[in-house]
Length: 112
Picture (cartoon, one colour):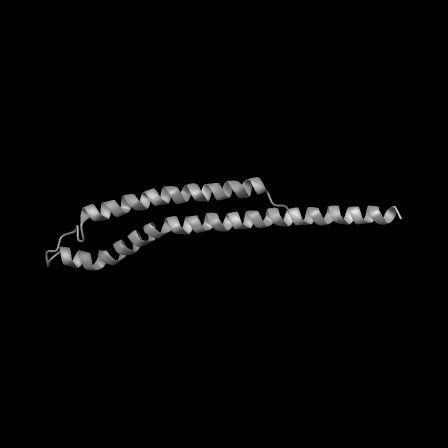
């Protein structure tokens, strides 16, 4: 037997939506900080700045890109959880309708 806690599933949907909102605000903050710091906040002098930039620019860009994509991932999670929740509700409703229909048909046969 499968038991689904619809309240817990709805709470998970809401939690994912809240997390997506927080991540969206964090992504905006990161984007603003990156724009304020400029393309190469470590400088461009040949001795230190360019070497440092060559090593850290890629990971910095990857981190910023990941932070910017996180809200979308969390929104997708919330949407998927909600689709799952609605599917379970629909399945339960259909199962209950089938049981009620079967009981009615058995009651109708018993009255013959």
